[in-house]
Structure formats: C-alpha cells, structure tokens
Image 1 (tube, one colour):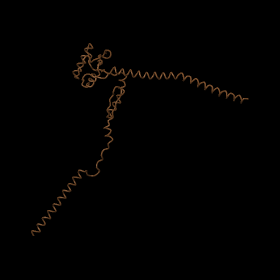
Image 2 (cartoon, rainbow, N blue to C red):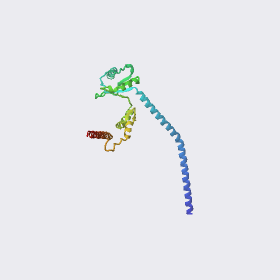
Image 3 (spheres, one colour):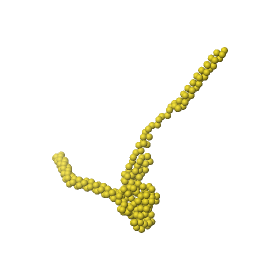
Length: 244
C-alpha cells in the first residue's frame, strides 16, 4: 500500500513539474512576444540617437570651421572695433596679410573678465575659410601671440589624450600629426629599409685589394729591371770578349 502511495506521489510530482515547466515556457514566450517589439523599437531609437549625435558633431564642426582662437593679445581695447583694429594691424605688420571688415563674421573675447587681469583669448570668425587658411599657413611668423583652431571641449580632450602617442611615434622617426581628433601616422620606410640591409662583409685577406695591386705592379717593375740589368751585363761581356 505504501509503495502505491509513493508511486502515485512520484507521478504527481513529475506531472506537476511538467505542467510548471510548460506554464513557465508559455509565460516566457508571451513575455518575449510583448518585449520583442519594445526591443526593436529601442534598437531603432539608439540608431537614431547615434545619427543625431553625428549630425550635431558635424554641425558643431562646420560652425567652427572658419574660426580661429588668438592667445596672448593684450586686453586693452574698450570696444569690438578697437579689438578688430588691433588684430588687423597685427596681421598686417607680422604676416603681411590684410583683413577687411567685410571678411569678418564676428570677433570677441571668450569668457568673463578675470579679476586677476589674465588676458582672455579672442575668437575670430571669418566669412570665408580661404582667409582663415591664409592666416593659419603663416601663423609661425607671429611673435607675441599664438593662433589655434577652434575645437569643441570633447575634441580638445581627445587631442590631449593623443599627445603621448604622437610623441612616441615621432621618437620612432615616423611622420605623425593630429588632424582634428584623429592621429595620422606615416611610417618611415627609408629608415626601415636601411635596417633591413645587411652591411657588406669586409675582405678576409691579409692585404686589401688596392695594396695587392700596388705590390703586383712593384714586383713587375723589379722583374723588368732585373731583366734589363741581365741584358746589360750580357752585352758588356760580349764587348769585352771582342776587344780581347
């Protein structure tokens, strides 16, 4: 009797486990069916967000394309016109480049006035990118001020993070620059070829070729002299014989 109860209990237990598993699977399938559209929508939204971020980044880059930042210019002007006049005179004297008012989109100091008297940088935006490029190509001629591109905060952080790698590549002898927020490296193929080339082995003979040649010529000269000397003695001997 006990065995029958145990058997019946085991069958019930197995059946309950099967039903529980089937119920669980059914519930999970229903949940998956309901979640699947949500996941797909979430994926679409993430893709759209990435596209929007790239679009914003492109717009930000395009907005700053014609801008330059001027550092080190004394903050003595009392108006925007005076600031422009000061910048214009500087470019004309040091770069020999004339900048007219109609070529400027905007010009102003960046940030709030510092109590310490620290000079604020100047943002200068050109109407055309051509004028900006002309200034940037000649910026090394500037003496008391420094000019840089107008980058966003995120781009500046990326450029700063790339500096150690830039220095390392240049130490290797490679050409390396940071263009916007990317590191561009060109390998020094000439240096690598020189390393691969094995040096020509030195001559193993006791005497170099040049010395050997000189010795051979010297021996030939000595032998020729000996022959001439022998002939001379022979000729003298013959004369003595005839005189006798």
